[in-house]
Amino acid sequence: MALFGKIGSLESNQEEKNEIKEVEKVKVLIVGSGPAGYTAAIYTARANLSPVLYEGLQPGGQLTTTTEVENFPGYPQGVTGSDMMEDLKKQAERFGTDIRFGLATEADLSQRPFKVTIDGSKVIEAEALIIATGATAKYLGLPDEKKYAGSGVSACATCDGFFYRGKDVAVVGGGDTAAEEALYLAGLAKKVFMIVRRDELRASKVMQERVANAENIEVLWKHQTKGLFGDGVVEGALLVKNLGTPEEEEVKIAIDGFFLGIGHKPNSDIFESFIETDDVGYINTVPGTSKTNVPGVFACGDVQDSIYRQAVTAAGSGCMAAIDIERFLAEQE
Ligand code: NDP
Picture 1 (cartoon, rainbow, N blue to C red):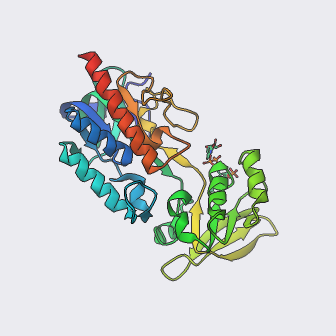
Picture 2: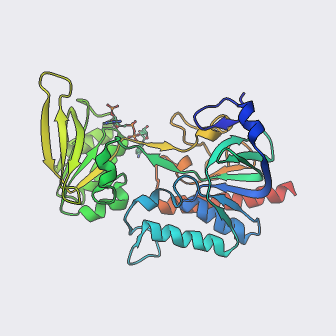
Picture 3: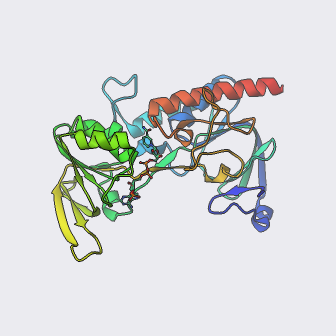
């Protein structure tokens, strides 16, 4: 077994290990700065466990890419995703969390203390570890997805669907995520297009039936997305039907919102050689707890949740991880 799980490669690299100069010992290390990581930080800091939290590639996590958050309890007027994450960060700092900018690039969880390398150069040795690295929605890779980010492009119907009440939207994808997003949006929007690249859905039969029975969902079979257009905000999508065949044709649809539903990727790569995951990479936790298969390593938030994926459920699981880690460390002492 490789000693180091590493981004891009599971093989250990002696040369790189030799370059590592600085080693720091901490009691509790939290990796990730979404609602799960910050909530774990608030609780562990208040329990006097002196947590050190590394923010990762996207400080604040996925919520910083959404606009308004209106479903997190306690914000009756709603709040922007970035303001909410800033509040959570301040709350974690208030109790003494040491919050640092940096990306976990390698991990060795073969024995305690666990070793997590930050930015390829510094090793943190932690008595216990909370993995809150989240998941990343998959995008098609079109430049227009970036151009209209927050202006009509979203990867979360539950977060942003409300803004499209009475409007026309499209969901790309044909799996359970896309079907679920389309059905959720069908309850709000006037019309929902599902852009499906094949002539069948990958979604479960029950979801296929629900999609077929929804009056305001139109499935565009064998369609792929070429681009989006609109003056500052999404006003439509340019699609290609029957790509690569003699019947290939361009199709334009008028929409106000374009939702990605082609899946998520849990950010568990560097831990995967030590931690049990499912086929997709979601970390397996002991049901009802945040415990992984490695004693002393806990997981919370979207990196271990393929089903709910909400800020409030992530925050709740962050609290569970903090309580689990506190009990674990107390038992060790
Ligand atoms: P899936 O991998 O199951 O489906 C992805 C879908 O997106 C497929 O239809 C795929 O097309 C399409 N797709 C992928 N890449 C592209 C692309 N570049 N262009 C166009 N279309 C693309 O992912 P899901 O997130 O839907 O589901 C993941 C797992 O989570 C599944 O096991 C699912 O059952 C589960 N899940 C369960 C839920 C629940 O129980 N409530 C809710 C959501 C997910 P193609 O079929 O042609 O490959």
